[in-house]
Length: 334
Ligand code: ADP
Ligand code: MG
Image 1 (tube, rainbow, N blue to C red):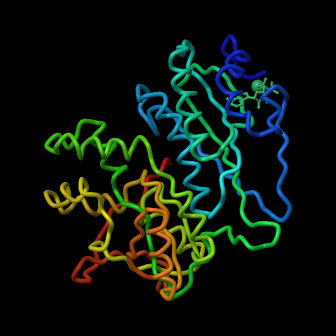
Image 2 (image 1 turned 180 degrees about the horizontal axis):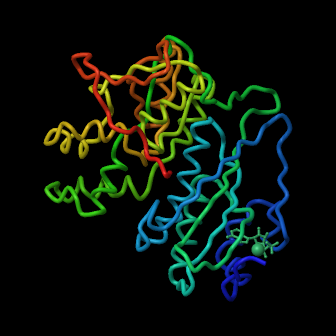
Image 3 (image 1 turned 120 degrees about the vertical axis):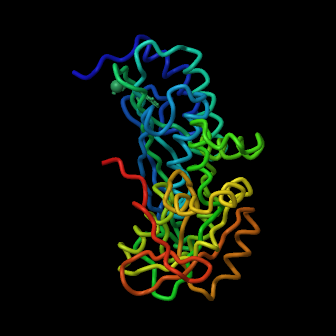
């Protein structure tokens, strides 16, 4: 016996979630106990799951469509970092008692938009009621390889090599600043850049196309969700290497640059804050030009921020190559 489902659980699944299963025959229209997954010959499944809890990962009154899309996207970001092609997802939701139909409608609308945009049908899950906060969990399945072994991947955290350059996609720190803006900080910022940062916090851009294209070139990669330094640290630990990155090379959005210009000490927080959903990866310096060409083709900037060294530390230097002292690296739940 588990917590009672909300009344109308089956109607709810049929109305709001079954349409997202239509493109995947093995989902059986969400009308059976479980889904059937065919794995194309020679390919492997990459599986990942991220949970989101109201009050921890988003605010309870955030727009429901954006909550749904963020749930999809944080998981897509993990697939992107492994160089995987999105395949299907499963979702567990625990809805607070009294959740309104309008909320569900908007939530399902957002989920459907991203399921279509990223070709990620929803093939199963579970729906319960809870006396606690809204809790969501999504399992994303991706594919790597092809039957001829032509498509490479997955890119693991453990593949970084001495002498590799370190690259990061997009811009760093927007999610961290966006959360602060949602909470009412950065009031001095003009409305345009403020809304940009909030948008980056609420709706990350998983680098799926970039990740797939990099799969043949990247040696080690990780999704940047806990903070750049912490996630680069994960690569280093898994690969048995150290890293040296230059703060002055960090790709910052215009909005982040404005804030750092006013408060230079903010830069350290951007490097260790979280919610970026970018990809940090390492590659042979000889492949730099090919990486730039891929970045151009997919329309996502990629910046060289440093290199892999011996040892086991992530060191951050400033423009004068002085070590910066950073606080606790990365967001920790416990
Ligand atoms: P069971 O009782 O076996 O747990 P349910 O009655 O909870 O199954 O679910 C019926 C079908 O609907 C199953 O295929 C399940 O995977 C799917 N389903 C339930 N909740 C969700 C959800 N939140 N998202 C997607 N599919 C769901
Ligand atoms: Mg059930």
